[in-house]
Image (cartoon, rainbow, N blue to C red; front, side):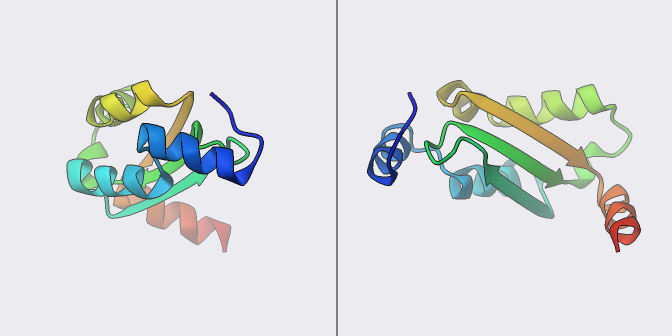
Length: 102
């Protein structure tokens, strides 16, 4: 289900109910995320998203465990979209990453 126009993209988003904003709200609520950045990488059809998620719940967890936590929290949403790429950080990791990028 992909869209070639903005109108088609709006139709797809309304059919699935999945938008960058709904994903962000769900992550904040379900994972106590302190920072969430969602990018629609689908070219406008709303079916592929990339995310940066910062949550204290990721502390002492492997990358795989973090992804499983996110995927469990967004099980219904992920089932409704085509592609999902999370990048998960603890608050400390995120601060260190931001400091090295400056």
